[in-house]
Length: 309
Image 1 (cartoon, rainbow, N blue to C red):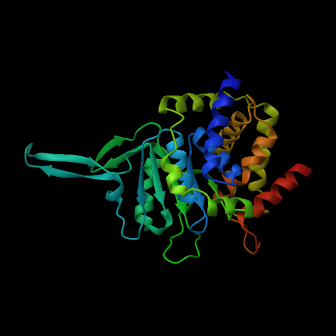
Image 2 (image 1 turned 30 degrees about the horizontal axis):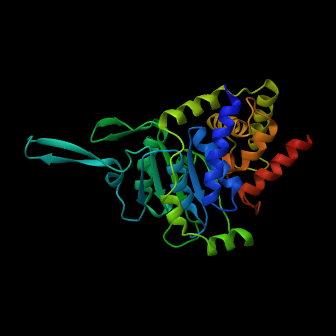
Image 3 (image 1 turned 45 degrees about the vertical axis):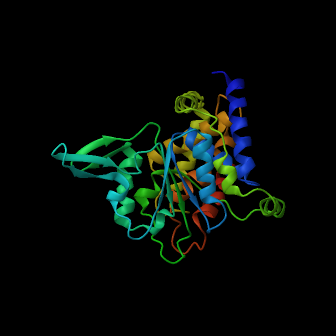
């Protein structure tokens, strides 16, 4: 693995993204790590803080074909997957693929769609294929879902089911910009224009090569023990109703490897796990009843307990 060359390319990529998503280097790196790990990304926050902008910027910078769907309450599953239409010239039905057949699907405000439509994404996100009218059709490679979501207490939203939340490798939140970053947004070029002008820095083949390098990042037995200690702590019943599944543990390790690659190392350190832990596991966990805290805060408390053990 040519770590130096890979590091230069990744740092250039991060620099370009940070010129558009101002003042959010951690969230930008989380998004890049998620795609390098081959996972789907959920961006949750209030409207107007740059969720869709980050999704567009990631797709353009990674050089991927993308489509955007505005999720609404009347959106149907066929609006995503496509339909077969009778063609008079051939006297047969011809399948017209929907926006799901893209390398990146930007699912804007995903929790405004009905549960039926949300569930239509499950097969695509897990199996990278879609079954339409009895025929299974593969999706392009690579395939990512980058979804934005408004807080659950806003009008017209549906809570994503646990099964779908588990399909997202990471969930991040942008938050409000600090004063310096906000001044830059107020006085600078229109953000939409900046995104449209972004050049593609990778090809699909180069991205798949980087994903292969992520898999080659080494994890020692001690590091694997640390990951298993975290998983066991979530299953203790002290913080969460149910603990992490083995699939969640695999996801955690994949993102930690991507984080290590972004840091220029070919091995995973505990710091890599800690840096991405809340974003990778908090949306998969439900706090115990009466705890009075959200899952992100519970994860932080659990991490401190494990560090002191």
